[in-house]
Amino acid sequence: MHPSCQLCHEQPATVHLTNILDGGEKRERHLCDACAEKEGVLPKPVNVMAQLSAFVETSKGSAQQVAGLTCPQCKLSFVEFRNKGVLGCPGDYDAFAKALVPLIERAHQGASHHVGKTPRRLGVARSTDGDLIRLRRELTRAVDDERFEDAAQLRDTIRSLETT
Amino acid sequence: MNVNDIMSKPGCWLGEAGPLSDIVISSRIRLARNVAGYPFLSRATHSQRNDLAKFLRERLEGSRFQSGFTYLDVDELDELSCQVLVERHLVSRQLVEAKGARGVSVSDAQNTVVMVNEEDHLRMHVVGPGMQLDELWTVVNELDDSIESEVDYAFHPRYGYLTACPTNVGSGIRVSVMLHLPALKLTGEIERVLRAAKDMNLAVRGLFGEGTEATGDFFQVSNQVTLGRAEKEIVSEFRSTIVPRIVEYERMARQALLDEKSRALDDRIFRSYGTLRHARTISSEETLLHLSHLRLGVHIGRIKDVPVTVLNELFLETQPAHLQKMHGGGKLTGEQRSAARADLTRQKLGNA
Ligand SMILES: [Zn+2]
Ligand SMILES: [Zn+2]
Image (cartoon, rainbow over all chains, first blue to last red; front, side, top):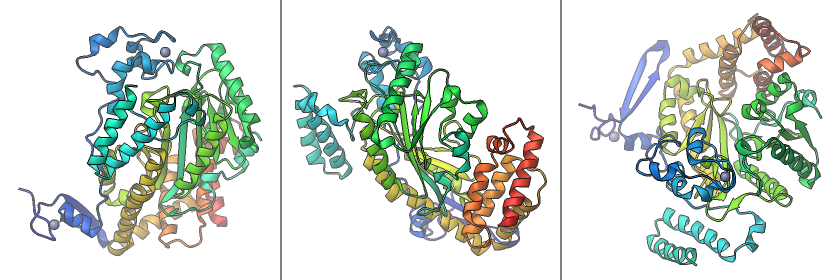
């Protein structure tokens, strides 16, 4: 049985503080999360995500499919990448895309598209790339702000651009 | 400028005080970039590696942004000089331990660094005392622009800046702050901070970053997610949420110790002061512990006659390679180093 919070006497105590008094005597405080936060003794996590498993780790199912992948440019095999944890050349991101995307998403809280700075000279390469990057940025913002209708619309626009 | 010149200056991140510097020792932002058309370093041939180093060195030295920079060819530096650069946090252990053509461009103020041929072709970072991530982002962003005007980066419309390790892909950014959290450590509350950091996908490391355990009172907190989040978003989360919360928590722990355990706290601080002023031989680990207590004593106003700059100098100069360099660069045994370290701390604190 958990002791209840010393302040509200209602919620179970989840925050345990030990203050050491003069002479080495310990004073313990037991608070619930809500009271601890009100007392200002708790740094509140911004978004609680499940702890990531180690980055280079066997992902189930696709193992056989990806075992044969080799980069045509640098000749690195996906298996070698798995063992070393570093890629051989920029081309690997496309060569290993299928196998790499789940790993990338796991390492980056589910994200698989870049948001943020782009090289200035890239703008000329493909005109829709810049739009996509901007739209994805807006999408991130919409989700953060919990504007889900906007987010859904943005997602549709992004999909239509991606397929062109 | 050579390594001796670098050593003769205090170094930026331990120099003067910055915002929140009672708790935030330094801020740092690093960007990882690779050159298009070349393999990453693990697959680069000897000559590709040489070409990259030569090409990047020329671009860096020719760039307007880099006036007042010195390029050091790490392959030609002796081991002790390399160690000094690592102890000053100018280069990573990985750069020093790598083989083949590689180098580092260091600004005169030692606050801007570009490593060539580390894990990625380019790793640039800027560092400053205290909490000043917004300012650093502006500087590193401009530095990146100026290099980009000379170099084609490997960039992918979907994945962003391509890096040798996919954990850095996207923006290639690592935002980090070095925090001094002695009161959270003393009260045991640090565990809570570490858990919260983990939940927020932050990495917490020790004084020397990657691969070092957070054991002492100094903690380096940095982002791990580099894809799907804009650089400014990460910077702003550090500025508005992560750092203020940890700082506030440490301040409260300091206040709690002052309110409820002031004699025990003073005992710790003044014993550390006494040890550093009177020891005849001391290890670097013990020195770091006492310097931490002394720093706490200075910032809570218990010790008034020691300037923080002296503590910062001691942090730097009591490290093994620095001690050895100061003693003419000859090999010192562990015993000799401990004696030299104690002499140095006595002298610096005696004069303080
Ligand atoms: Zn309560
Ligand atoms: Zn490849």
